[in-house]
Length: 450
Image 1 (cartoon, one colour):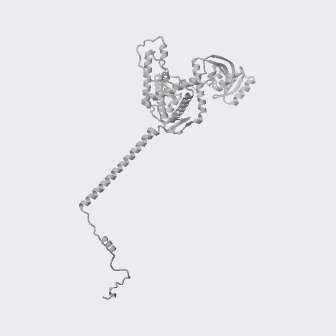
Image 2 (spheres, helix red, strand yellow):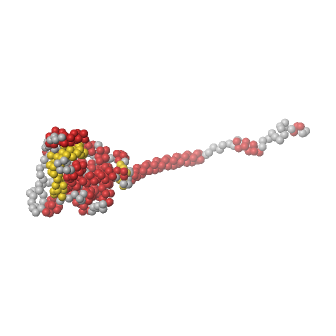
Image 3 (tube, helix red, strand yellow):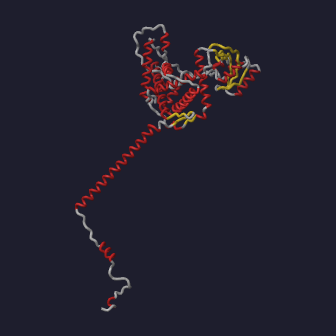
């Protein structure tokens, strides 16, 4: 065979035979598939089912974990975070949601109890219950129960005042002990064991009546009442008298002590059941009352039974211009009594020619008291502005007299309220009330009065 016959006709360097690699690839491509046996097919399906089951189990576990996490977060929020959120601060001391809500529930219980007592008294006396709606403080109590935010605002302001009292007590080294708290509780229920022991006569009752131990309590009790000092305008509205209740039978000292214990225990139980308050919570409330009372005595220690009395008369008008006109008329020689009868908006004293008579200086609001304390006897002074309007005053006489115990108590209460108001004004830059409180006002326990 010649060389020509051996030529393939392909370019030099190429052959018509596939390379070893190509053969391998061709063999690999043409490799026949091996059909799995029935046993292998069954095992794969089982594995798939097991994998699916594992995935389902894992998914359920994840969902359960998420739910548990959500519940834990809710529990932490409700049990720790929310109760410790701050509704107000007083000189960097916090008032928390928990304290706020506890006090709101307390006040709701008190208002419900108070209204229940008065409604029962009205029904027993055969009076119209609709009269309660227009009378104070009953109308306010009803509004507090129907409008939670109204009560909430009152409570947050009271808690701020409590903080101010606590801080002032620390500054003045005023403290209370357990006996002070016990005395506050006895005062709250009108129980005076000393007076009982002092009574020489102890009647023997026959027979002992059944007494319902439901205390008549004030929604925000304070050691002494806050009175509006004279001079004040006589009210023109006619109020319905409080229903007459038959007098309770005279009890022995032992019976009074038993009644006090029953009333007190029922009171604690009522607050535990309806407000969720422990005995310590209730004692803390009475501690605040005792602290307020002792602080009041400390800051009003200069008020004694020796008091300045003033005999004066006045003409009260609405504007300073009207007061200037009255003053000019008096200086021109017109009758004080006739002017008082014709123009004074204090219709009570006006009908008597403006006469206020003899009164302790401490009975008057501060601007009026300051004016008559040093006024020249017989001179016309003014205009003196008070919350009632503008006064033209004439002092007839002044002298020192002995005040009664009730007058001293009233004077101390008014002086303390003025002191507390002034302290609140001085500390207003350190007092913050956050609007968050309105989101946490409880409306329980439910009110039976709508």
